[in-house]
Amino acid sequence: MHKRYRKFVLAMYRKFRHPRVLKQNRFRRWFARHFLDKTVWKPTRHTFAGGIAVGAFAMMLVLPGQMGIAFALAALLRVNIPIAMLVTWVTNPVTMPPVAWWEIEFGNWFITTLHLGNPPPLDWHDLKEMLRRITSDYTRYREILAHFKPWIASLYAGGVLLGLLIAPVGYALSYMLWDVMLMLTHRRVKPDPPPPGVE
Image (cartoon, rainbow, N blue to C red; front, side, top):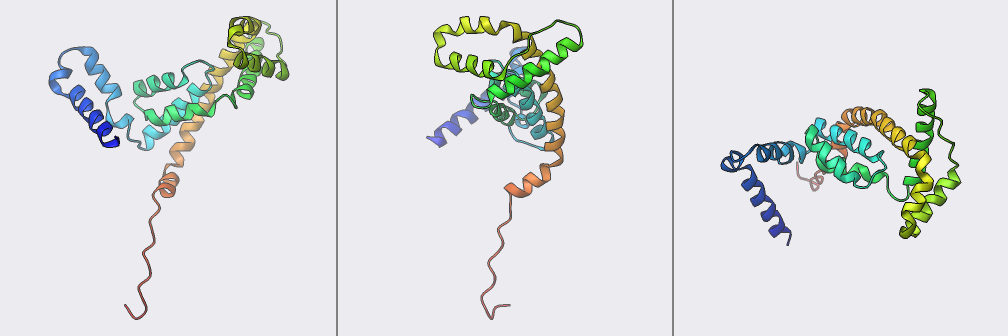
């Protein structure tokens, strides 16, 4: 099954990268350049660090389809797509409540500081209860979101700003630690010592 899948992927790759196909229209040339380039699938120091940065930004966006956002941004910026998509899983159903709460707190501070509004404070327990009700009863999704409306602007302002702050930090750290990660993932196996009496 794995061999068939790999054969299918390689065949599709060759088909879309064929010069005759690329000459047909601009969209196919653009698609091949951004989504079929080997550099966005095989990590190098720059593309790996860029994938971490893109994933770190996308994970702070409390939106459905974070992986899709990371996929598109990574392809457009020509950084590693799988790494970017993988990093978005840092914010998952378990970690989402504290992340959302910090984003709202930061967004409230930002909006109040710039005199763009006066959003009400949000208690941590109220946020946890709202998220619990959303996940337990999807039929009342709109009703609960309407109750959450005063903090929507703070959530997205805080998320975008925190994402823009975290992304360059993630890039710098992963860029500097690239050699360390290579050593950890490609450890050389020590050869067995020669038997006694053999020089």
